[in-house]
Every structure is written in C-alpha cells, then in structure tokens.
Length: 216
Image (tube, rainbow, N blue to C red; front, side):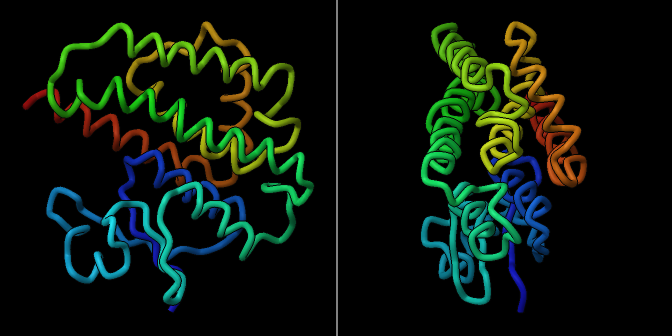
C-alpha cells in the first residue's frame, strides 16, 4: 500500500513533512487535499483523521497527524541513522525544544498576525507583529554561532523551522535584523535534501494564494 500523505503544498506544516521525508529518504504517496472543495471533510478522510486536518499520514493503516509528530515518526520508523533526531537524551531534548518553539511560538505568532490579514482582511496589529519580532530574536540567540539551530548538524528542527521562516519571509517580512537567522537560513536552503521540491515550490504556491486573497 505504501505511505499516503494528505497535504496542501502551500502549508508550512505540510512542507515540514515533505522536507523530513526527503532527508530521511522515504517515499510518500502524495494525496493533494483541496480544502476549498472539502476533501478533508469526506467520510473517508474523517475516518482516517477525526480532526480532519492536514497534514495527515496513513502508513498502511497507521494514521497520524500534527506535522512534527509525523516528522519524528518517519525518522524513528524509517531513518537510517539518528543524525536528524539524535538518540542522546540531551541532544534530542534540544531538537524537541526547537520543534516546540516552532509550533508554539514562531509559527503560532506568524499565524496569529498574518492569517486574519490574509483571510479576513483584518487590519495589521502592531502588537502581534512585535511578537513575531521577539520570536526571531529568540531564534537568533538559539542559533548563535552554530551552523544549525541545535549545533553543527542538520536536524528535524531545522526542517520545521525553515518551512516556517520561508513562509514568513514570503509575506515580505524582513529577516535581515537577525544575522544568525540569515546565515542559518542560507545554510539550510543549501543543504537540506530536496529543498527546492519539498519547500521552495510550496512557498511560491502560498504566496500565490495570498495574492489571490488580496484581490477578493
């Protein structure tokens, strides 16, 4: 049967998983899910995922959603070594911390500020924008002099964070005040396996969606 992956190309969480799959070397059966048409609300999909969210993975009957959980599952189940998600408890804890920072702080603050603007034509909220700035300040500190966000090896945390950062940058957010982030971002784009196919193309699709929404 293979591993079915229900996704939307423009979604940063979906691209997290695509990047992880490329880095791990696992093939996914891509199932494009049109949310506008309600593909995620069909009885068949809800049977797989009662929350009817994307991304969703179906590995021969084992269903899983929430992108960071999917990333770590794929690594644990199919990874050839532990470089992306170290077995050492302290090293793994740092990767987990960055993953939680991504979903709970950086991506959350991005969505809180930009999604009302894009999808409901709300006015920009300077206080919410400042929270994004603060999140980037934290990320800049986390990276420090390292090549990657937890040290000098690419991990799942870098793949999750780069999907978020590239999405935020596509909204014309200026990352130049954060030099460590700028350097890290260039490094990950250059070294993450399959970056162009797994992430860059989806960023373009997200940007196109934003432009379409602006015209409504």
